[in-house]
Every structure is written in structure tokens, then in C-alpha cells.
Length: 545
Image (cartoon, rainbow, N blue to C red; front, side, top):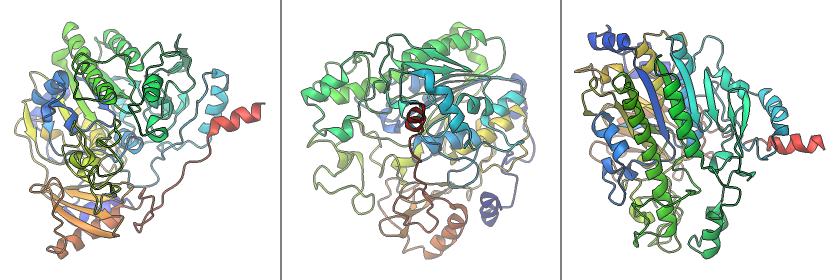
């Protein structure tokens, strides 16, 4: 049984989830299809909404991302996943991370040596266990390919924790350039990257770990001379990955400006550990920030610069009026800039109690986050609270989309169905997402008030409805919490005891949907957390000796 389809029918009149919720194709939808716009999707990594000046960030400015948000359609109630691996898979397949069988989060640490002689053998071993969608079920790139678009991905790997070149081909990409290992993505100076069927060496980058400095777990005195020296030791770190990606993106735009294209750019930025080749002038002389905070802020600004380069190149090529630019992020904020005694992602800085997101909630204030990356909502990355799953999402198409705030609830697993609807491509598989194309249209039909989405987390699942109600499982108390997000976005007032029937109704739906949960404590009844298997590259190398 398709659990999403079953649970959805409990609340709404049953309708195909992979099509538009409008009965007839509107004139606006026809115009969009006839225009055959290019689509560029820029995906920030661990970027909380609070880091963007469009949402009130005071320390730094992000004018280019702000332009997309303020001059586009800003989805104020958009949701991703609780961390990046399921978020990317969910985006590219159209399936919720609460449902088993469609994809797995493949293991990481595949290519942990600068020596490329092992790559083919590692890929061969990994491909034996690859889980791909069945024939007839579409990945996101497939949808665009079937509409006659050239598809490209440039940046972080698109799927799980690790991938191979054959898997990238199976995911539908006409062109691919970037990493194929989640762990290597934690370093910003790769000795080589993958491009289609080839390996491209990056001269001057010699670090096996791509320059990854796992300072957060090794030392908590983050501004010590030792940690600072390690971060700024540039031996074997010549070419910064985002600089490489920027060049490849510009090349892609110039090569494909005369044909419809879809470009997906999953950036590493600003995922930690912090790594930046230089401090940005915005923060370089800010005496109120620690060295680590300056470096992290520079990474956010660096991502904004990439958005600016894309917008400027589109205008230079005279294709800005025929290109939809979408900016989003995978999950909620993560603090990569703690400082002993003043900022912590682990403990309340005043009470020193460990955050459990139950009786001790993570908020920007409690954590001492100067940037307010989570907007002082409860929770952060890996949580089912708003700070963990609420994401930025904006569609920018000058001359076509009327700038406004869109309050209907949407999920990243809706994007594939929305693009299929926009392109006029039929999807035969029963996806979990629905099309929100009418929300992009002038005076388009709104989503039903009882439309809902399901998200997973290490704390258990949560269900959010379009009318603002949210049911959250609490892995500490092994109970359910109920919030009205329209009046309580910080999730401070649990209303479960006041509305027991609503809890019962929503729980019945959520329990039917959430057949899988990553809750490490296995507190949720359906928890089936699967630990990653041993690191494959170590086995391949050992067997080669």
C-alpha cells in the first residue's frame, strides 16, 4: 500500500498526488509551459533562514539571495528534511523520508584517498548494492529530460552519503560535475572531482580529506592558536571548491544558453567545518565576532556571491527573462561556530544543561548564537522542531512571477511533481508530493486547509498541516505534542491536552505514514534506524594489498 495515498485519503477527497490540485490547466499554466523557461535550483547546505538579511539577519548582508526572495515568490511555510542526505534524496525522487523502499541513504567515506587508482573498484563494489527507482519511476532530472531539457548538476553529490558515476547516469543527468562522497564534501579543497564518466584532477589540492578539519569534536576551545593554525594551514589547499563550481556553472550557462536547460547546484556552503580562503570585508574587522564566526559568516556571504554571479551572467547572456531561479536549503540551521563559554550547539549557555529539545530546547538565544540562524525557533538540524525542518524557498522569474509572500505549506518532495506539472510531463508513479504550480500563478488556486506534510527526524516524525496545526513526536517523553504554528511558531505552548481529539486524528494519520524513523533512541514505535555499513574504501584497499 502507498501509505501517503492512504493517509491522505483520510483527510481529503482522494486525488492523484503527482498532478496539480487544480481540476483544469489554467491559462497561466499554459503560458508557463509555452515559455519553456530554463530552471536553476540553488540549494544551500545547513542554511538557516536567520542567516539571510531578507529574514532579518543584522550582522551580514546577503543582497543577491535577498533579491530572489524579495522580488520573487517567497514561500514562508516551506519544509525540507531534518538533515541533508534524506533532503537531497527526497527532492530528487519526490518521496518522503518517512517511507521505505524508494531510496536508501548510501554510505559515505567512499573515496577517502587522493589516489584515484581505487575509484573504479570502489564504484564496482558500491554499485552492487545501489538502490535505484524502478523502471517507469522518474527522478527529477528525468522529468526535465522528457520535456526536452538539457540537465546538469554541479556541486555536492545529489544522493545519500555516497554515489558512483553509473548511479549519476541512472539518476538522469546529462551532465554532472562535483563530489560523489558526503564525507569528502566536508572539505573544500578536493584533489579530484567527477565529471560525467571522467575523473578531473585539481592541481595543487593534495589533501586526502579535501582539507576537512573536524575541529568541533576534537577541541572545544575553538579560538585557540592551535585550531586557528590548522584551519588556515593552506598546504595542499590551493583551489576552493566553490570557486571551481562557479566557473563550471558559468561555462554551463554559456554552453546551453540557446536551449532549454535545468541546472541543479547543491552547494556545500555554509556546511561546516568552516573553511574559507579569505575573510569577507563585511566581517573582517568586526571586533564583536570570534575568528570562527567571521569565517562562517564569510561562507554565507560566499554563497550569496555565487547567486549574484548567476544572476549577472543570466542578464549578460540575455536569458534572465526566460530563466526561473530558485533558492532553497535542505534543512534547518546548524551552529558551526561554537565558542567556549559563550556559544554552544550542545548546551544551554546559562544553565549548562544539555539540549534534548524536550525540557531543554535549543534556540539561538539559549545557544548564544549571535547570528540567530534559527530565528530563535526551537530546534536545529536533525530535529523535528521548526528550527530543524523549516527552510527558505523562493522562485524568481522577472517579468513573470508577481513578487509576494506565499503562505501555503509546501515540502521539498513536492518539487518534482510541481516541475512535471509546469512542463506538462505525466508521471506514472504515485509520488508522495503534489504539484503546487497554481501557487506560482497569478491568483492561482490555493491548497486545501487540511493538506499536510510529514517529516522525519532523530527525534521522531512530525506532521504539519496547511491550517497551521503541527503534531510532533517527542522522543524523550515518548509522547505527542500539538502546536498551532500560526500563533506559536516557536512551539512554546503545547496544546495536546486541550485538543485530545485533534491529537488522536492527526496521530492516526501520522502513524500510518511514518513507517520509518531515524530516531536513534528507537523511541518511536516505527523506528527502524539502520546504521551505516563499514567504510568500503578501506576494504577495497586492504584487499588490494
